[in-house]
Amino acid sequence: MRYAVLGTGIVGRTVAAKLASLGHEVVIGTREPQATLARTEGDAMGNPPFATWHTGHADVPLKSFAEAAAFGETVVNTTAGVAALDALHAAGSANLAGKVLIDIANPLDFSAGMPPTLNPVNTDSLGEQIQRAFPDMKVVKTLNTMNCFVMVEPGRVAGAHNVFVSGEDAGAKKQVTGLLVSFGWPESAVIDLGGIESARGAEMLLPIWLRLMGTLGHADFNFHIQGAR
Image (cartoon, rainbow, N blue to C red; front, side, top):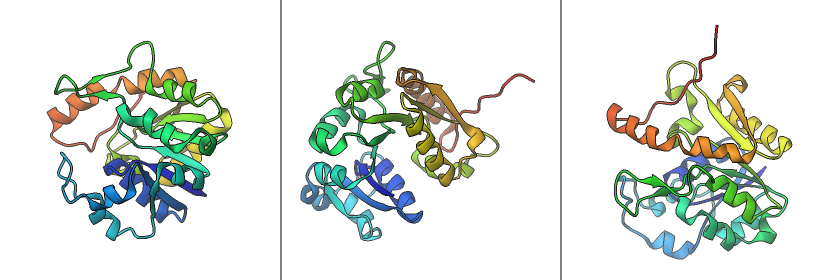
């Protein structure tokens, strides 16, 4: 399948590399490709600039958001939550219509410093905002409740643990579940939370996730839902 990964940060790079390793055709999208390639500074987390990563992943072309979205049969949103809607509008409604959008982004708001808050929260979610803005897309929220390396290599976490999916279209969720299985997730680990409004709960796990990361001192952990005996 042809995938367009929107966003050139560590999440986008990690997901794009995994998709390419599985034999998919992958492009990665950004607002201004030449500006992205020209950056020489790393990010706030110490990750190298995109150009450094790209030298080792020349099989993943860098395109504009619109070019990437036009190429992809399925689109993956890994942009920063505050920029997600702008990035998708730049990608273009016509390039997104009818396609599955896998939304991994979280609406983290750093305007008041650390730790970030969520915006929207409680009565809305980024997943819902995207679905409303692009009603012809099939939005599936998933993978937003864990570190990007766990997303594509669930075996980094010992024992059973879970990944959630939210969305209105059953066929789209089935397709995304198949992709998760190809990443190494057991199908039994995938929990369908329901419609896209259930993305509110998945996104609201981020505050506790961030606190856990600070307490544990690493990000190789995840949530496990244990049922009754």
